[in-house]
Image 1 (cartoon, rainbow, N blue to C red):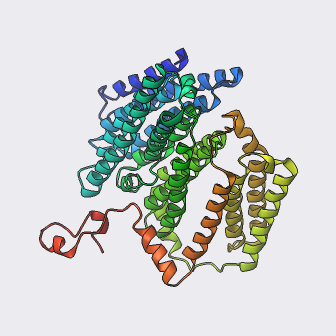
Image 2: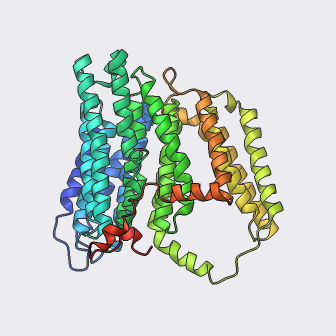
Length: 486
C-alpha cells in the first residue's frame, strides 16, 4: 500500500474515532465525522492524480476517490436526516470504518491485505444494517446480510489460503503460477466472494431485505459497498481458469434478467431501486466474466453516483408520485415513441460502425447500453410534452449514446486493460441479450405466461410466505412485516 493510500485509510479510521467526540446539543451526535472523511477524500484525490500521471492502477485510484467522496456526501446528508436518532453516532463511526476497509482492500498490493480490508468492510456493513432498528424487517435484513456476506468472505479467505499454500506468496503477481485444479478452485472461490458482495444469485436475498434500513445506509450500500466485486475480480484476473468466469456469467446473467423484471413488480420506491441495483451488479459480473474490467469499473462508478442521488432523494420521490396522482394521466404518443427509438438507435449504431467500436473484444456489451438508450428515447418520444421539447430530449439521449460509444467505451481501457484468454465467449452475452428482450416482451404483456413471470419476479429475493397453520397458531402478525397487509 502506497504512503498516500495508507494516509487515506488512517484518516478514515480517525474519522470513526471522531464520531465519539462530544457534540453540542444543536448537532447530531457524530456529525463532525464527515469533515474528517472529507480530508480522506482529499488524500484520495491526490492518489488519483498521482495514478493518472504515473499511469498505474487507474481503476483502484478512481474507486478509492469515489468511495471516500460518496461517504462524505452521505454523512453530510445523515447529519440532518438522522437528527434525533439515537443510533446516529454508530452510523457515522461504522460508515467511516466500512469506507476504511474498502479503501484498504482497494489499495492493497497483496491478496492477504486485500482480504483483511474486505472483511473489515463486511463486518462494518453488517453492523450498519443492524442500526436500522429492532423491527422484524431490520432483523431479517441483518440475518440475511450476515449469512450471505460471511459466506462470501469465507470463500475469499479460502482462495487466499489456497494461493499461499500453492505459491508460497501473497502477491497478486503470483496468481499466474496457479494451474489446474488449484487455479479452478481459486477462480470459483473468488467468483463466489464477488457474487455475494454484489447481491447476485444465489446470494440475492440479502440486498432486497436491506430496503428496510435507513436511507443513508441504503445509499452507502448501493453507492460503494456492492461495487467492490469489480476490483476483486480485476485483482484476481491473472488466475488461469475459465471456471470462475462461467460462474460469474451464469450468476450475473440470471440476476440481471430476473431483477430487471422484479423491479417492475415493486410498489415501493426503495424496493425498485434495490432491484435496479441487483440488475446493474449482474451486468457488472457479466462484463468481468468477459474480461471487460474497464467497462465494469466505469459502469459501477456511474451507477454509484446515480444510485446514491436516487436513494438520498427517495423521500421527495414519494411526494412527486402523490402529486402526479392528482392529475389525469398524459396521452402517450405511439408515433413519438417510434421516432425516439429510431433516432437513438440510428445515432448509436452509426457511431459504433464509424468509430470501429464493433471491433472491440467486448463490443457485444454495447447491445445492452444501446438498448437502454433506445428505450429511454422511446419513453421521451411518447411523452406529453410539446413536440419541440421532446425532440430536444431525444437529441440529448442520442448524444449521450453517441458519447458513450465513441468516448466512454474505448476510454474504459485506461482504467483497466481488456483481458484476454480465460473469458466467456461473445455468444454468451448475445444469448443473454436475446433472453432479456424476450423476457421484457413477456413481462409487458398479458396472459398466463406473463402472470407466472410476474409472480416469480415478485417473490424474487423475498422471505417465503408462512403457512396459514403457522399464522393461526401464534399471536404474531401473519408472516414478516413485508407481508403483513396481504
